[in-house]
Every structure is written in structure tokens, then in C-alpha cells.
Amino acid sequence: MSACLLDTSALLAHWHDEPGAVRVQELLADGEAEVLLCALSVAEFARAALSLGASRDEARSTALRYASLGTLVAVDEAVAVRAFELGSLASSRLPLADALIAAAASIHGAMLVHRDAHFDALPPDLPARERL
Image (tube, rainbow, N blue to C red; front, side):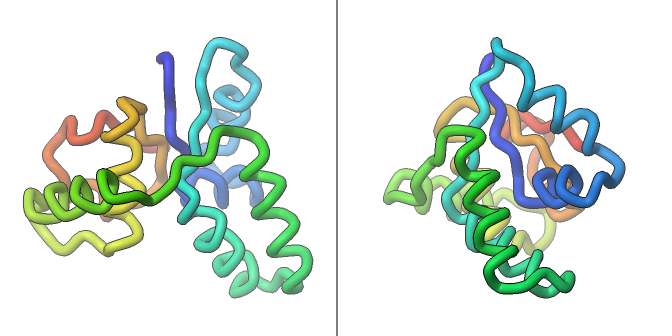
């Protein structure tokens, strides 16, 4: 694997040491893997951490610490258009945040690493995925 994009669900699994955490740690430690994160995941992670009981400062600092572990991918026009395309191909409703994250992986040719059932609505290899 040359590039992987960690979905927010993968980051949360790692943070809480839930199933999939070991795999995320392997990817983060792999010197050969290019680890990407969608910039949207910074906000999504911090909001989830807050709702799970973290203080606002802890949620923010933890999200930024994860952001520093890889290359942040912006949500730009190309990602937005690809999110629309992926959403229109989905077999069921794909939340916008998930469509944008999947699109970021797709645009950058990265394997999407996740724990989110919403991605099952996408065609099998759009983008390539690894479910934790």
C-alpha cells in the first residue's frame, strides 16, 4: 500500500483502543505508507471526542495531534465534485462528510481505511477501502 487515508472512524478507533486500533497503529508506524487525513476529519474527530466526554481543549488538541500524524488533504473543488459523483453512485444515502472523505481518498489514489458502515453503499472499489 503506498497511500492510505484514515477516516475519522479509524482515528476514533485508535484513540479509544477499539477494534481496528492495532491496524491503524501499524499504518501510522509504517515508514513506507503515505498516511493522509481529510481536513474535514479534524473537525469531525473533535466534535465526536467532545460528545464522548472529552473537554473542549482535549478534543481540540487530540484532533490536532492526529492531524499532525499525516498529510492533510483539503476539501477543494475536485473533492467536492468527486463527493457528488460518489454520492450519486451510492446504493443508499451517504452522509456528506463521508462522501467528502471518500472523495478525498479517491482523488488522491489512497486506500480509505475506516470502520463506518456508510461506505458499504459505495461501489466496491470507489474508492479502494479497508474496513477495520
